Image (cartoon, rainbow, N blue to C red; front, side, top):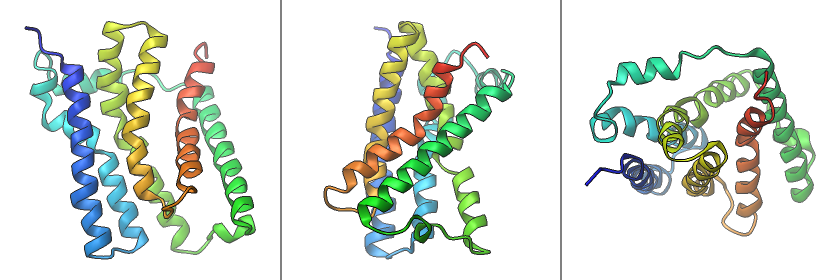
Length: 208
């Protein structure tokens, strides 16, 4: 019987992220009462778990290829400036819109949520650049996307990958939020819309 490496990887990634959230993030928050900046670091480390899983358990997911060949292929494409700038603009625009909507719901001015402190701003930039999208995509867009493309066409592969990606992140976003009531729902939706703008840019600008 042929091994379904894609199914094996998806199930393993869900089990791993649940375990990390319960035993690492849960303990850091509930037992050690870690401050927000530490929880942000913990969240980033957990968000990279699809890549940890892939690289550490490589032989269990793609035994017919080496890690070196796979990574080299993933980074062999040329970076196109126009889609990159559009992705940045779209992501920034959605983030600003989400901030305005959130401030309107909370009844507070937008600037009250922005801290331009000497330490706060550089730290936020660093943590943002080391967040999930920086490290997790080797697993999602690298391995998982290739496996879906072997089975389905572009559209179906995109939908399947998006569903796996969305449900995997939902728990992480809910834990990351400070809300325990209905406000967690729009928070998760705003996070989903902001991060998926990268994928939207790739779909809208394939010819460039």
